[in-house]
Amino acid sequence: MSDHLTVVDHPLVQHKLSLMREKETSTAVFRQLLREISQFLAYEVTRGLEMTTKRIETPMEAMDAPVLAGRKLALISILRAGNGLLDGMLELIPSARVGFVGLYRDEETLKPVQYYFKVPDAMDERMVIAVDPMLATGNSSVAAIDLLKDAGAKNIRFLCLLAAPEGIARMKEAHPDVPIVTASVDSHLNDNGYIVPGLGDAGDRMFGTK
Image (cartoon, rainbow, N blue to C red; front, side, top):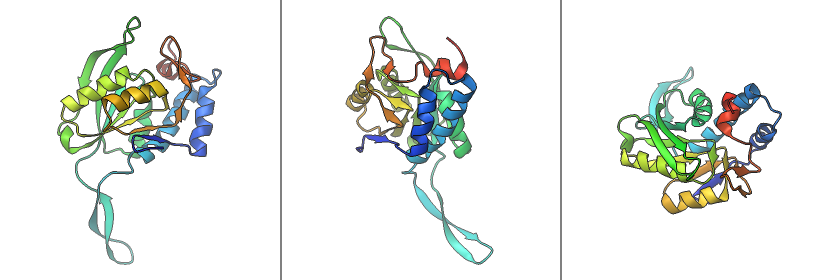
């Protein structure tokens, strides 16, 4: 644990993640588990949200009750696999604004190529949470954070299901001001840039594609 990296080691998160890793787990079950885990991760990544108080009436008396302050936070899905985390998080934070960063990985160079970018306004006034199930090489994540900063975002967090040490190091080097929240730091990347032991391609397993 550090200021830059938080591993959510809650027993339910770890149990659900183990089920997701199993290659026999079906697309439907994989998707449901991802939705459930995303809510635990969202709970952790939103700890620093600013609070204020609001005068309310309970059935017993008036009180100054804690409520969220400032602009609605922005959830940014790094397409396409980020949408699996996004769905569960929106159940927990339905008022959040949503943006999308479309990046695909060039299979030859392993470098990210941008094809879509649409984010909410006033990014400089929002807590921005970028979500992508896998932090592998870190190249696409770094590129996505670059784009978000270019759009004005200042308070950014990165949320992923699995991270490789290589990706964590790359992110820390490029964006030391962006905390990472993940459910697991796995062993390493293989020659194809996949996380090991990992769970395969999160997008393919979530959407039933190959």
